[in-house]
Image (cartoon, rainbow, N blue to C red; front, side, top):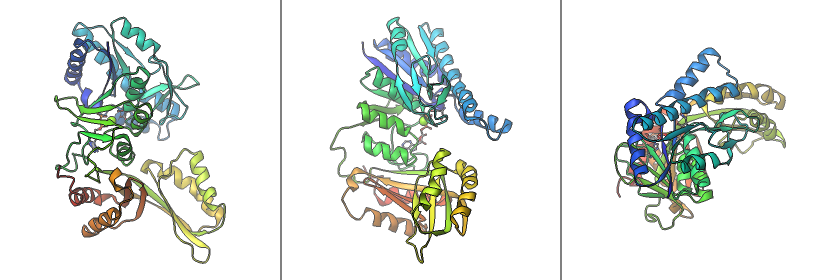
Length: 405
Ligand code: ADP
Ligand code: ASP
Ligand code: MG
């Protein structure tokens, strides 16, 4: 009997009727003779609601308690889904991340899965149970519950698929697959039949939240194909895999965007060895991850330095930078939280000139100012004003003819 791993996201289990719908889908797979393991996210906006509630009680909640709190969202949905299956006459068992054998490191709120011991799941499957696992969580070496970062249930699913040697990991969500851009922003976006791990990884890390980026990384490492499809309609979806020769003609595969960008600029920075280390070491110690760094060419040994982080980290980062700026003798430092980024992604761009120029021309034609630029071999990203992101995505989608199949 084949092991099937399915994951259902928050909007797919948002209320009792949707949970029953998911239970019927699980029933269909089980009736085909599969051993079924299901990972669920928290219902609807539960995670956001719990974060808001915690912040009302304490604006600086302890990460350990925060993770324990957030992990309850997935416990609720997993138990309710098991109950829905019981009501339909099936044997099902709900397991927390810990009970499912998922170990993580100790980085609360962004823990990495360090191992999976699937014995309990296998035992339950052998007893004829459908296994429902609470996504987004695992157990640290200290026996604490840690969560995997927003969207992390995808990663739980792919990790389980890898450890159970499933043929494919099925991710069911509120769209019909991976599109050429966020279909909520670009109505003309096209669903892709397939996409390679590399491109999907760049899309995910550039803001396409349809897949948690670490789930794609794990899929690639363990060579697990990932199917992304709708939890509501029976349509083929998108397969993420490592195959070659996929739609080679279409050199830009997709546009990703992210509204969660803020920057800190430090001006009048003395240009001498050790200054960058003095700025970025304390940020790293505070687990603030810095994305893009731009340092101007210096004039008279004085330079300006700008870097981007996620918006919520700005207050903490500004506190850290205050004494550092003073110590290194910088002129001033300031932040801007009204930024976003837009990226074009495609393996076909490798070693082919003209893509950056076309991107910049397109943004210029929309009167959009580019504040920072970063690239990888298969991605070009522009940091722009937050309120221009929508226009930028739509214009780039059209310019690179992604609406045409
Ligand atoms: P789930 O709760 O099922 O995990 P998410 O909200 O995390 O669902 O991810 C699905 C959402 O991702 C879609 O509703 C869509 O708005 C967004 N999205 C962003 N970029 C893309 C893309 N390129 N293709 C499909 N969906 C995308
Ligand atoms: N519930 C978590 C979140 O909202 C994890 C997930 O949905 O994958 O981010
Ligand atoms: Mg998600």
